[in-house]
Length: 64
Image 1: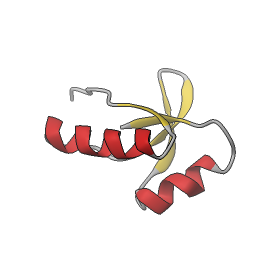
Image 2: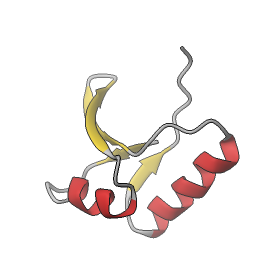
Image 3: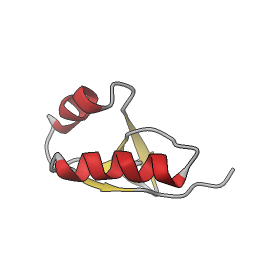
């Protein structure tokens, strides 16, 4: 789950919802990672929560 930060306070706000959130680089851009999820339903639930809280978020599939 990736969140595009709008302000420097977004990481702190995000950690209130998802304590394990971290700042990372994805495709050359700095983003906030709000977790990795094993199921689509789990990811969708978190995505809905983030969008409802006003974050600009996207679920990105990553294959290893």
